[in-house]
Length: 593
Image (cartoon, rainbow, N blue to C red; front, side, top):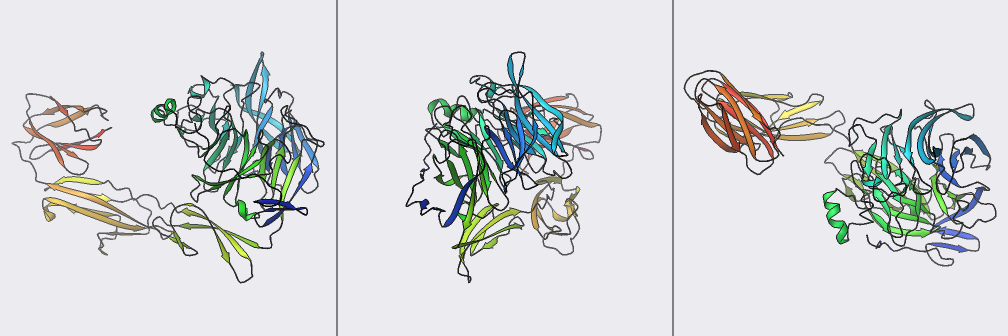
């Protein structure tokens, strides 16, 4: 653990990043206004912008509603009767199906009471006729507690549902257990089944070693971020990646204490990209790329409960590090639980003072809207660009070639500074599908074949070799090492190049033809010892080549024996075994780990 080195900038009244003077509020050069669009809620937990341009929200006691952001009118959709609200438990996260018009599903997670214990379940509702009905339980029986229950939901572009769970106050057991679902980020198909490509076969677990993740969001680059409560130190902002361990309870924050470093090395621990000591009690988070407030472009906006503030984390273009941190609205409204952003860049905050830990003010709880009302110095432009791998894009004099979100300020003829934000991605040109090397004897003929689907092929810069395959006749080339390079172009105009190393050796003639069969074990090889079982009727030769074509072993085999034990070098890789006589040749490939 360690205290974040990022400097926190507090809200000030006259001068600073936000000013409040003559009833004006500025974020940089952007004038904003704040207003409470609805009051007298009871612990709003989740707010999200719906496809109907309404805010959908959960309140911890069990109510799900739609909020008209223009009028403040609340429409109740359902109050779930078996929600158990105690401490931090209750109705928590919610997410809508991305194709809501065709699949009007609403996924929610909440705590319930069963046989004297608090549990947690994930349920899918169907929206119809202005209400939520037809509940379908996707997952239940997860241990809950009065504290540390998570839980946020998000659906990615592949239609997989992610759900965070808290450790249920079981610091020493659940988070590192790969059989318990607590202290995890879970990944499900939308029907509640386990995806086949999860890191642990048959398990919902996507990542582990979490304490109490409270925020979850996916950026336009497809990076998933989670904000997580620490104990009295090291709140965290994490990038969530498949199969990674996030360290709790052994690791808090970064891997920088003697008790943490070895655990991190041994357990594939993913360090946070930001950590806070003292803790802020970070909660819901969202990604700002809508442009209405240029100073927040490419920022993660993180709410916090204990610190009662909004934290803006400016990300690097690739989204994998924090390059600046600013603090806003500290103690303006109290405890901030969640955030959502409209497509036109209006920011909405869920105030949560009635959660049992806040100081309730008149009108609490509420949803606050932050709106840019004057942007006289700035105009905004956003674009998405996709390029071929290996190409570059000229972004106002800056050559870029890596996926990421880039911003620049350009003075234009209209007299305003244009904040240009560009999301750069790479086209998927596919794979050529060739092996790195091929070994053949002088009397062999081999055909190299690339994958189909490209619109053009060319081997060794020869316009006549324009098919997806080329035939190599070793006797026409002679003994030696040769390189065959193929250039291909896909339907999007992207070019790819691949090279195959071809090793041609002398043929081995050893007496007469006969039966020639052999097998090897183990395969793959984790150590150095390899066993070869063979059946031959005449003398033969065993030759072993490494994947780069180097011969690393050769031995004469006799029909009077049928087994050989050899020791491979320490180098991991692919080894090619050949048993040959003057007329018959047999091959095996062995992978050394």
